[in-house]
Image (cartoon, rainbow, N blue to C red):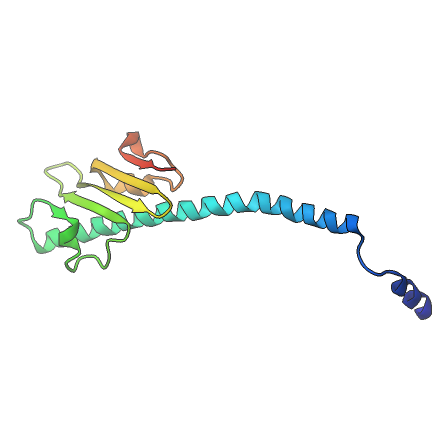
Length: 149
């Protein structure tokens, strides 16, 4: 039996051309499906990072106002002076504290690598940014606009 198996294995030299082509086609199909999906994951993570930068600046602005109660608004330049480590993707940021029963809001813009721009319109709240999906074109009622996709 051992000699029979050895003889059979010696007769087979390798894979045929058809088998190799079949393997290459299968790999190409898998790559055609996987590459766009990976690209979307990367883009969504960049938008998530920009949202995180905005929420971090929002929290830093609240800390700034706790230290400076007479301030009427907070800008990105003021936050970079010890209230946030890095502006990250934020190009501009202006925080307006809540007056009376209204909710605190901010406005600003972020530029994310890959050509994505996020514009936070005046009146954008922390809840609006948190609720925005990473793959969304616009936020709550069009208040948060993601362009460049």
